[in-house]
Length: 146
Image (cartoon, rainbow, N blue to C red; front, side, top):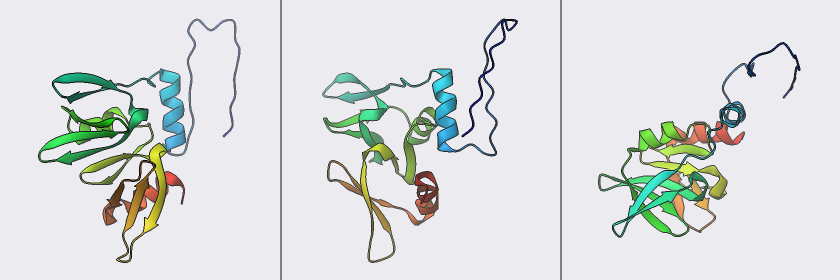
């Protein structure tokens, strides 16, 4: 990536312009950093308590029984937002949709495995696994640069 910085004493307000052929995860991350949207907190509910969850600590968000669950190292939390709202809020972060019901954090991937039936499976660092739907395999591969 080519980076250029111009210093001009005549400029009244600083601004940044990013030229790109398409919006890649790298470009989106750069834009988010410039805008300062790095600390997006999600509220999770458990045992009649409300917890503030950093997206970095969440392994995945999944829908179960009409609820959205945030899975973390410390346990599962119920989230009031819908999965598509979380995906929109975390756009440009390290999350990718791996199925209709799961939004996964790539930073917590341990490895990807090929199943005997042609499906791909994500193994998380905590040992849990989630299948990647056939519809999402291409998107995950593109995101990871495979």
